[in-house]
Length: 65
Image (cartoon, rainbow, N blue to C red):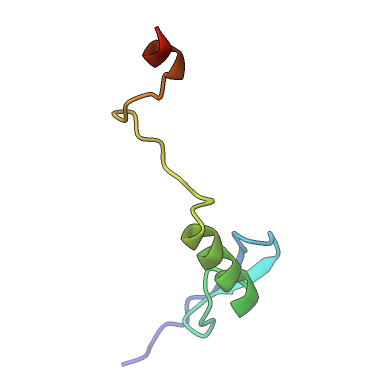
């Protein structure tokens, strides 16, 4: 039984540099621990958000009428 070593070069989502996408890269799809931690920090500080189309819109002017 042989194990396939499927590796390819992809763009790092954080810095845009080359990143090896393979089991040997423990930070994949990122190129380094720094890029992975930076992305985690962005999620933790809520820099990435998904729109909620069902959320009520804040209309301050309507409350003043």
